[in-house]
Length: 185
Ligand code: RP5
Image 1 (cartoon, protein in one colour):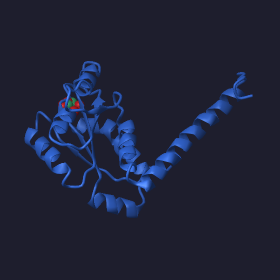
Image 2: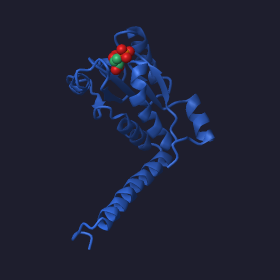
Image 3: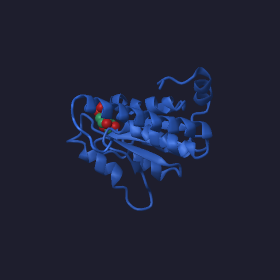
Image 4: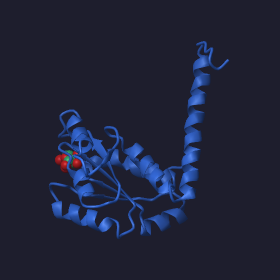
C-alpha cells in the first residue's frame, strides 16, 4: 500500500485534520512519525506537533481544550521518561487519547514511560499502546474514525487482507525451506 496520501485527500485533511499527533520533544519524532505514516496509508492526513507537558504546560492545556472545537476526533500523544503528556491531555478533553510510551534518551529502560501512561488512575483513561508502538496508535486512531467513515473502514479491511497475504506468503516460504506442516495439507 502507498504510504503517501492522494493529493485530494491530503488537501482535505490538512485543512481539517481529524487526528492530532503530539509529542513531548522533537527527539520523539523518529518513533512518533510512525503514527503519521500509518494514518497516511488510510488516507488520513494528521496534524503533528510538539507539546511538552512540563516545558510548555500552558500550550498543553490550550491544545487539549481547543482540540474538539477544531474538529480533531482522536489525539495520539507520545512521550518518554516520566511521561505526563497523554494523561494531562486526557484530563483536559473528552476526546479519546491514545498514549505512546517512547523509549527516550532519558528513559531508564522504557518502563518509566510505559507505567506513567498505562497506569492512569480511574476516571481519566488513556488507551496505551506498546513501547514505541506509534504505528499501532495510528491504526487504532483510524479504527476509531472508521466507525463513522466507510472509506477508512474499507482501507482498514484491505490492510487486514494485506497482512493475511504477507503471512500466507511466509507460510509458503517456510514450507519451501523443507519444514513439514500437517495443518495446511
Ligand atoms: C520527554 O523527555 C520527551 O517526550 C522525550 O521523550 C524525552 C527527552 O526529551 P529531550 O530531552 O530529548 O527533549 O519529555
